[in-house]
Image: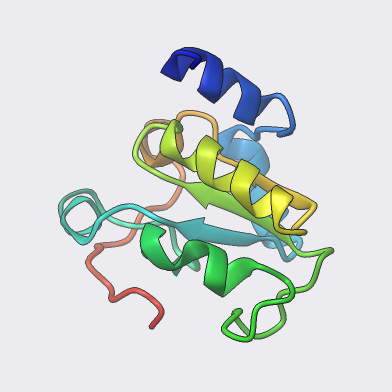
Length: 131
């Protein structure tokens, strides 16, 4: 069994992780930003405008290109940027999405907190997750 650091490094080896500024540019070009943070974090810290909130426990079903429960418009070519608090669990989640066929899945390096520290727009959070 490998350590969590090895596990994380393995997940990240397939990702082209993006900076907050690059994520913002990709979002403007049509990329989907997917916020997997718990409601308490979103309520306390805010959200990225235009992000889709998908609880981590539903992520694979909502973003797998062949899932009957996927979000409308998700295809194998969809660029999806997964966001967590600091960019750890989002790396694991994005790697899972790639394994399920979402080849352009990646994550936000540094997570939501890096986005906020970069001075990018944040709105009051707490919106419900996509059912």
